[in-house]
Amino acid sequence: MHDTTHPIDDSTHSPVAPKAPTAQLTAIEARVLGTLMEKARTVPDSYPLSLNALIVGCNQKTTRDPIMELSEADVAQALNALQERNLVHQSSGGRTGRYTHNFQRGIGVPEQSAVLLGLLMLRGPQTAAELRLNTERWYKFADISSVEGFLEELQDRSAEKGGALTVKLPRAPGAREQRWAHLLCGPVDTRFGAGAAGAQGGTTAERLAALEAEVTTLRATVQFLCNELGLSPSSQQ
Image (tube, rainbow, N blue to C red; front, side, top):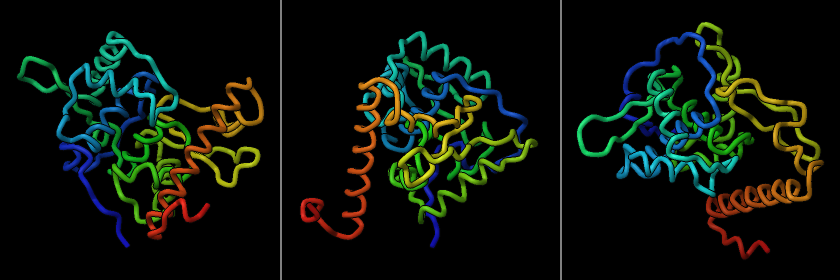
């Protein structure tokens, strides 16, 4: 089987070239870049994005981890930094400036890898199964092993191309699968499988938030499996 191909952006038609070591992004720059990547796929009629639309996308309460409250100044500063690194372009003409991403060429990765990195920037560490489910609107991977293959390629990326861009986190206590995290913002704390430690420690609110996130993921997985099998979730209760 082959993955279904969709262009991630106009810039992706050019061949991928080897890259020099990649400078780290800030958390806000990663959120801005990931949001542009998402909207290019999910709402193409509204893309390129105006500054206001981009702010709204960055501050969404759903499909974001962590949730942010970015100001216009925060987003504008991130856009300037990303433009200097050729990761974002501002379109010319019109009364309102609009922005597009140049992630795939700017970082030097294939389309499938760009999709996975975009989801990791927006939603935090995820298992390969979660990534396959969450990328449905961005790119249809043939199977979980295909997702894992691209994640492993990113983890083994040579220094000449900029070094590793993903890391496989240790299995969290009670978890069945290991999660993956991106390294675009620098090294991550792998001692407890990133954010997975919330169910084992922290405040009551943190533990509840971790459990709620897990339930949401499980519900989405059940819905996806039922759709694949032509079943109704209610019939499985």
